[in-house]
Length: 243
Image (tube, rainbow, N blue to C red):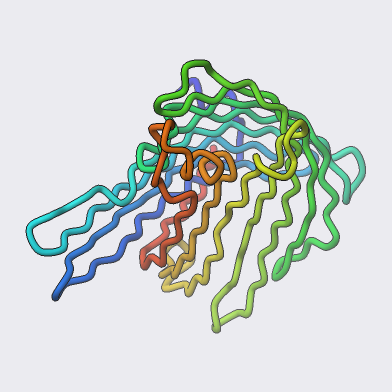
């Protein structure tokens, strides 16, 4: 109830679950999901969300965990003029497969909306982030300062569905070349009803810090792949909450 009061009304509750499975000479499965509360009524936008994914693979008698991650996010945006807004956000995440014990960060930034209509929306944002990172085997914690560049869009093609994407580029301002993150989602959705939609999701994640350590025999991240990508099928539920 406290969360609902904080966000205000009208609210939209979003939930999705997606996954994939492979059987035959190899067996693999992955399941992921996200729940969020979103308010987008001018001049404010708010979002509170939780997401997680878990996957495993088996070849012969051996098996391994291929995905184990989660993230919590709080975001507040405020339009200053119809197409320009400032925002603040905080997040905390883990990724067991890539050796990330915890990454907690927060920041402020600005977003420019190139266009926003019932059918289409596209924006570009830039932010400055400060935070804490702890990787498996590191003797000390890291406190990187990062830039964050994020294009985001949604294009609705009526009965042919909708295509949306979000892409982040986040370099460490002290180590642009070796320590940067690139991650994002591309989602194709086809609505069954006003509240339920089928979705096809492509997710990508690359971490330059993991890449720099994955070739160092003295690091516990030695041999860890610095990238993840998944293609998932799932369902999305969108429920307007009003009072």
